[in-house]
Image: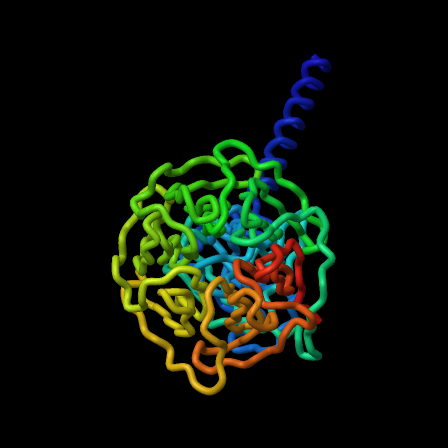
Length: 455
């Protein structure tokens, strides 16, 4: 009898212990909401952003925090891992045309989430002298499956300039790189990539990458990759993209290639809707790729504009843009507009055009005033320190100069690179708040050097 009572007591004790354990697991902690507690049906909102909207001179090493009105389930707060805008919380400097990759962490309340530019393996800085915005999408959901009522987009804060005490040119003393002329330069996954090129007789097959502009690594491009020069390239949707080009002006292509790693290339389209061409432009705007102008196999210059969201299906925006037919022009995205500058339509040009419409169907010529850069083709353009920049062109006719503008109308001569002659087929890129000029043809020599503009 005693043994039975002992067994019953033991079973009763185990049952009570289990019930106590189950109750403790079902009770939400003081610092975290749970779906087992009384449902909070209020809609979550963004209460604060730090740095706050309108803040200026923010350090490029700063982190960004976003505070919600209630606890948010961490799995529902994700960030972009490439330049493509993905994730439920995004950080951008160009109206979410592209995004800055970031790592996200959170506090014990699950209300404050902190973004640090970069990835788990490589830190990045914010973009200098530039407005940054944060977006929280309706995919941000709390513990009770309630989402933000609408996308939240901050007005933005502005970072400090890295050139406050001056920036100067220096030779990056590049090793392991062959660029020549007519190559493409793209920033992708924390590195600069140099793709193709040539030396007037040979056309290069190589694809190189560098994280510092000095040491370059051959990606050993394979798959559907083929040698070419005077092509166009960009980064989009987490991939490198290359379109068109040819072999020193012949055997022009209208193919579309992509690669996630610069090594393995895939043909997305062997014959896109646009005619084979070289010396054209390619850029990303409003979450699409845009191809502009160039020159075809019959040496006819073009001013058509095409767009695509996948590289396969193309839409012709216009076959006759307001700007004249041209090749060797420079194009980039700045201030949420597409800019087309200079080029050759039989004569070299110095005009500046922009389009801020959603599909680049309408163009306006900028009214330039004061001293500006001379007519040119084969030059390059980029965005650096919150300004639009133009470099090079017109091989051998003058020094290798640089011009910048905050509005595309008034330009400042930033000065020439000492001892360097202007080049055609030169390319530029920005990485880690440093500006790089790569390769080009001086009129007598094909260059493989890298020039850096930095504090």
